Amino acid sequence: MGATFSRSRTFVAGEVLTAVNLNGIETNILNNFTFAGMDDYSASLAEMRTTTDPYPASVESQPTSAQGELERIRYQDVLITGETYWYQDPKLSLKHFVTVAATGTNTYAATLDPAITAYTAGIPYFVTFTNAMTALGPTINLNSLGAKTIVDQEGNALLAKDILAGHRGIMVYDGTDMRLLNVRTPRSGTWTPTATLVANLDTCVPVQGHWFRVGNVISAFVEFSADATTSGVTSRLRFSLPVASDFANSGDAVGLLDTANALNDHGVVLADVANNEVELNWIATTTSNITFRASFGYVVF
Image 1 (tube, helix red, strand yellow):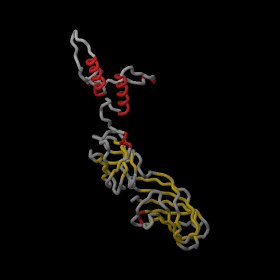
Image 2 (cartoon, one colour; image 1 turned 135 degrees about the vertical axis):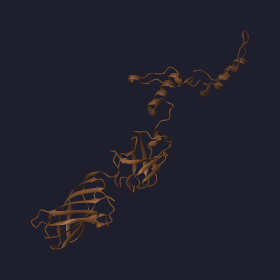
Image 3 (spheres, helix red, strand yellow; image 1 turned 60 degrees about the horizontal axis):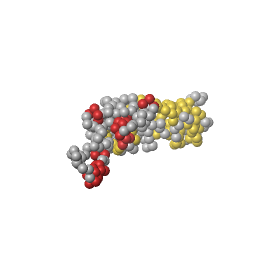
Image 4 (cartoon, one colour; image 1 turned 90 degrees about the horizontal axis):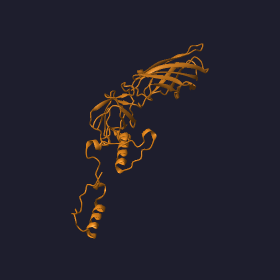
């Protein structure tokens, strides 16, 4: 590495050195020997690509010149960007770890800054969905590079309510689709429903139930104890859902309940449209506290 600025004076043989001449040379150096006045160590492409590991085998490799210092900085740049050479644009910027708004509904769009120029398999993208999905098969278009279908982490189609308004999504491009690693709704689990007494009941105590989801259909199983106010009269109660749904008809949920008591009480489960819950109905044969088991299914809308 040398200087890129010119001499202030060229002496000839036999010339007498003067203070003016020497001071002029020194002033030239002081004024021009800045970073802009030094060789940039990129005279050739090979030189531009030269790097040195500053910590080989976990031992410090100390530079002895500015050239060595620059080579070690370049080496670290390569590790940080993940590119082949230190000067290449990285596929992912630290700024990309800040979520950006994905606007639209079902056909989402987002703009990453700095802008990406192509989708890269394995690269994560962070967005906040402004609106909930209202149809299956949603897509997202980043920086106008083309819409990609959003699927779950296993590559399966998303289910209803997998994207809700305000959901902070972590997506990874798999070469074909965008995989949403943190879908909003789980595929199975346990839940203890909230019970609401509707008619002819003094108490109801539900215990933890189990549910699983296949596509947009939920199957649920739960046990509860209840005692009716009056025998021979229909008892009614509501249970909250393990996964929310927007019912339109009473037939959107169907199921049965029964008990092992001597009178073999049994009943039906159907959708409560007004409250988006399930309603359990049976004709009470006793006012004693008895245990029921209910199983039902419904569609997530």
